[in-house]
Image 1 (cartoon, one colour):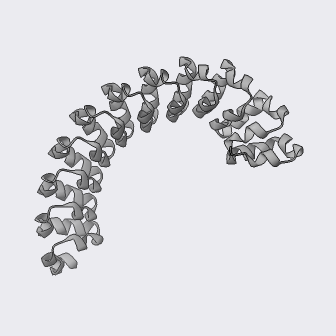
Image 2: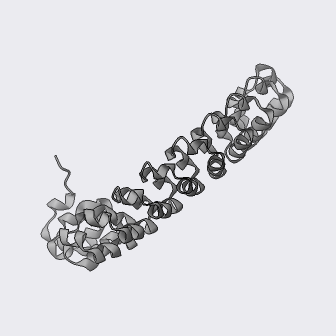
Image 3: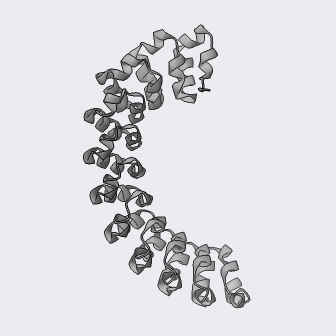
Length: 272
């Protein structure tokens, strides 16, 4: 059964009450569809609703959803208003550009053609890196687009194609923004010491996603535990027996002590 807004069952008095309907729309964007016709036909009121949440345009009347000038005004207020636009307008370059310039996540509501239009997608991912997931397969393999996305949000690397997850410059940009992006790098680059160092210096937990060889590299592990002591749990067993490494870890976070070797857990210098 199709979900209905609670406003459906409200009295006509409440359905005509501007403030009440606006509050209802904040709770349920589709409530606009249940407002009194006098409010739904009032373009000024609909724009007020869109200002509360762009998703409210879904409840606008068909004429408003097809009115290019009106939809353009709406997406400039909140890009997500594109969700309620007529299909032709979701494929209108100017409308979609305005939407993604207001909110990068509006890309999810654009037509397939627009999600395959490079300048549109670039604006979206520069503003909001996660928008890369809504780009076409072709553009998720475009180096310019992916670089822009991972520079904005490193974890956008997960939405790039395999070739770009093996591109050293792209991965370096990603881990420089968020060390955990190392999780999405190719196995070859997860074994790149410079990349691993950049990742763990920003986010010690990234050590978990470094190669086995680098989890046994003293420089990499020291950098990780100095950032987050508990990263010691991801270090090679030999380094969990290394007094300098363990001292660095417990100095950062005492909760790293359980991951030290039994011998070092009995060492006064370590425990105190």
